[in-house]
Length: 139
Image 1 (cartoon, rainbow, N blue to C red):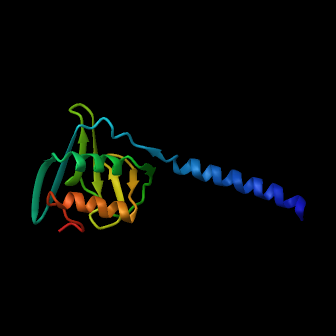
Image 2 (cartoon, one colour):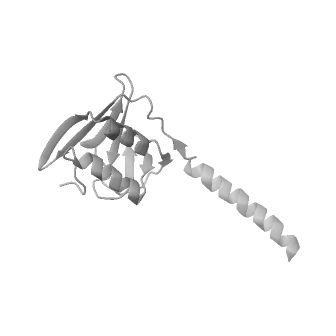
Image 3 (cartoon, one colour):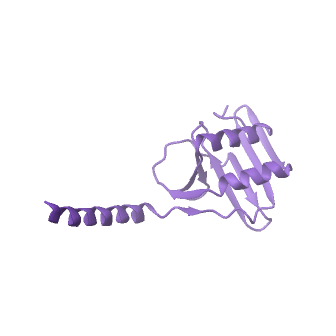
């Protein structure tokens, strides 16, 4: 029995590594380049396009979006570039589309990559963007 345990554990470990690789290694997104953060919220009852000028809010959003990035092709949350936060430096930009419900998934526009916010991070995110008129769930 003990002779079988070690090979079985090795096979299990190798299998988990393959699953991890197949899902894509979580990487971190670099938000340090951004000097400008803008919000877009176009929903039936609101139309907001604004630039965040509060440096504390800019730093907080950059930090929230700098979390691990995961690949996933099957999330069913509602994402749209019409509800988005753009980090840019005038040449480079990354557009983040938060889920229009209250889940912590934020899609990186034009990709199958996501940042997942914890409940605490999502509350912090909601508090910041609410100052500029963005509300979740979207209304």
